[in-house]
Every structure is written in structure tokens, then in C-alpha cells.
Length: 410
Image 1: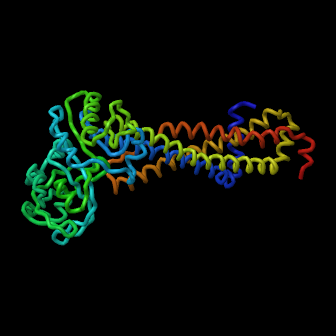
Image 2 (image 1 turned 45 degrees about the horizontal axis):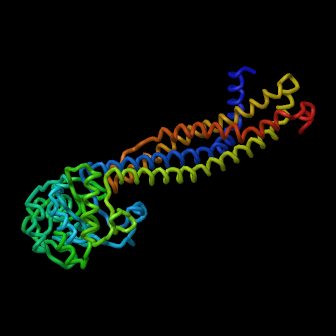
Image 3 (image 1 turned 120 degrees about the vertical axis):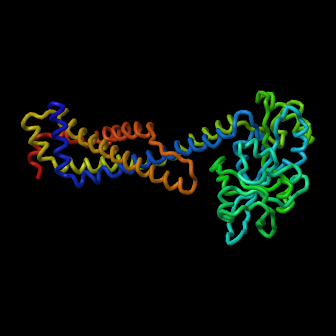
């Protein structure tokens, strides 16, 4: 049988039972759609996170609590022992090889101003924060050294929250409340958007010392420094200074003895790549279960199809059809079903991924829609393979039937 005749014959056979064919494809459609959805969202998430980390800059270092050997596990954990104090910042400011030093402590609270009462992030920080982050002030001024030293009750508003509370009014000199404490507005930031997974237009800035007083905190979440030195040298110097400040006797540089670790943008990117890769593999493996289930469904339906077409198989064999012709016929039908299911699954998964990205962007701007090429290739190869693997046994059963026995079947 010619290949074109084989394709045409298989296609007509599938069309005769189009309802059953659609149901047979359903498992493959769901499986491929799930794979495409998982991989596309995974790649979109990876790109978004890397774009956020790229804003960190190659000349900046971040000091975090915890030990370097377990940083990937501990950094996001609330159970890490906090160790970074304001005295560490003052010690680092004495180092002439550091251009800038800032620190951050985050707190959630309710801001009240005018008719607005809204929960938001309060960032306690230091004057160098604005330069390190590359931000700028739209109105008024940012936090000063005098504000930090004086533990002043002053606040700088993010652009959006300022518009929400004061509208077109000039907020400088006016008062807002964070919790039960009143603050004088000294500045409004330029619109920035989302960085480091936070909408910076919807946060407010306090002097770090003020936040410590009001919220009864002793430690900063992190310390950020900017240096002109090569990063390896800067990291080595930072470790020596921080060990001295924390009275850590560690002449051999054993990271397990430290209660802090220094991270670069490259370290963060490497960790993100590892985490997102593992998540993508996990999600794809879960989605692949649907493909296996779909393949088993195809095998069962093909067995039913063989039983229903025994007379047809006997007739074809009696007029000269060979073993390989019957085998190819049923294999071709299985492959056509799975490839068609893979195509529909790819389109469905792409649409669902696009829809998911739109929804995510509504709450967290900055995500981009990506159709995973690896997912598309995997979908095609897997669907074809499933057709061949799970279609083989029914096809073999049909091809091995004796023509006379098949013709006698009712």
C-alpha cells in the first residue's frame, strides 16, 4: 500500500467514527496542554525573576542573615536568626572602599490619610537607598542622615499611594498615619513600577531607626553596599569586617561559623535558575501523567476498534492485504489521533498560558507571554511516540488475524 493511500484510508476511517476519535484524543489534548502551560508559565516566571534581579546591578552586594552553606534554603525562611544591626551599618560606613551603604527592614501596616485606609509595605531604610536603587524624588526630599540620627517621624510616599491619598494636592508637610503613629510627609518618589517583586509605587519609606523604634525591631532584613572594587575582593573584605563586627573567630573562612553571608546578583540568578528548573521538571512530570493516561485510553479505544472491524480486516486480508499493511493502517490511525491531539493540546495550552499571564499581570505587572519551544517540540515527539507505543498492540492484534476466522466473525 502506498503511503498516500495509507494516510487517506486512515483519515477516512477516523472520520467515520469522529465522535469516538475526539474522545480518544481528549487525554492527549489535556496532557499536552498541561505540559505547554507548565513550561510556558515556568519560562515566563524565570524571565520575570531574572529581569527583576538584573536591576540589582553588578557593582552591588547584599548581606543577609544566615550561613552561606545553607543560603538557598534559609534566605526565604522566617526562622533564620536575625543578626544585622544598625551598628553593622555604621561600621561599614567607615570603610573608604565602599561608596554607599544602606539597609532595609520591611513591615506591613495600615496607612491612613484623608478618606484612604490601606494596607501596604513600610520600608525602613537609609539615605543611600535612593542612589543605590537608582530612584529619584518627584517632590520634596528623601530621608536624610539627620532623619536617621534623630529617629524622626517623617515619611516618603510612593508615587501611587501619594496620588491615592492626596490626588493633585501637594502632600509635602501634610500628615499621614501608619497604624496609630502620625508622620510628616517630606517627599514623594518618582514612579518606578515593580522591582524585586514589589510595586515600589505602593510602598512608603521611613528612616530605618524610626521603624525600629515604632515596630520594636532590632534587626535589618538586609544590608546593601556599592563598591568600585572587583566583587571577589569586595566580598573577602566584607566578610572580614562583618566577622570583626560580630566577634566571630573564623581565621580559616569557614562559612558554617558565620551568622551572615554575602550575595551577588550572579549568585541570586544562579539560585533562581536552579529553583525554576527544578519546578519546571516537577510540573512537567506531573503533566506527563496525563499523557500516559491518555495513551492508555488510546490503546483501549484502538482495541475496541479492532474488535468492531474484524470483518473489515478479514475482507482486506482475503483480497491481498499483508500483515504489514494492516499493522501500518492501525498504527497510522493511532499516530494521526495523537498528533492531532498534540496540535490541539499545543494551541489550547498556549491560549491558557496567555490567559494566565494576563491574569498574573493584572496583579503583578512585568510578566511576558512565552510559548515554550521546548514544550512544543516535546509535545510533538511525545504525542507521536504515544501513538506508536500504545497503538502497536491493537495494530499487531489486527494484523495477526486469520482472514477466514475474521470473515466468519459476526
